[in-house]
Length: 209
Image 1 (tube, rainbow, N blue to C red):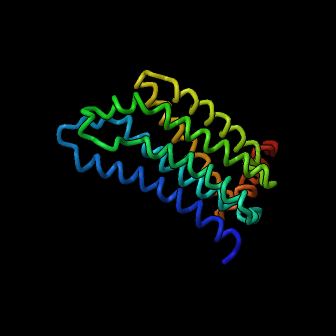
Image 2: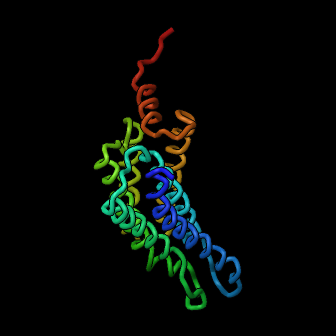
Image 3: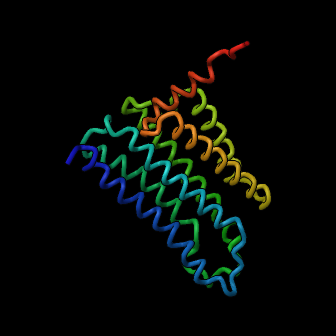
């Protein structure tokens, strides 16, 4: 077993539990639809968390060569993944019979979900930078991530439900763009190479015939 495999077994366990929280919550909603107004907001927030948690898992993989084994590494990784778990834990209510409308639950807990998500990403990227891994390789990734953070912070504090819906769709669109660029530029998952490749393409002057 490599150092990364040993260390990531802890990180993967917590991230896997976070994914289970969201998927399990969605399952509870599907089983309890009678008498419960589901709406679009909470399920879309769950979808956003599934995408973000999967992206975080992939982001850790890109740092595999730089992760050392130490007790400090384990505790730092536990802190990062723990914050992601707390975000996922708030997406769906534990007791659905206490809520007649999931939009009301969304209004009360959306801020906590998004704030934990943003803090988790900030801690993850700070950890990558401390290990000498560029968490935002290339201009395209830097720009899209800056937009993502701005939209996420706005979502955490906006109260209008229609605007929240649009902001979540915007975050999913940004995530989709980043994932597509990563997949097309480097199908083997090296995000640094992908970001550099896309930045190089964007920096090339247009060819005039």
